[in-house]
Image: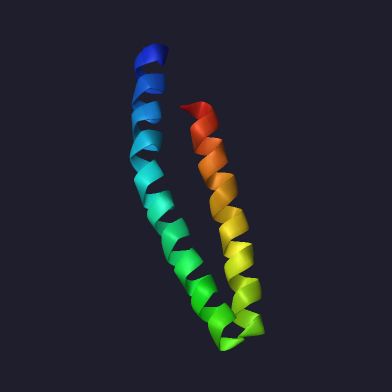
Length: 64
């Protein structure tokens, strides 16, 4: 039973990978736009969001 639950959890995590990758792409686009506009506040927000997303991605990839 434990094996089945672990297998189901891994499958759920694999399904999250594309979503996180899309969020990273979107945030990179936001960062690019902020850099072009010189919006220092948005640059900081985007960088912080990218750090969080990177950590999530690394965590999911380690458990895969």
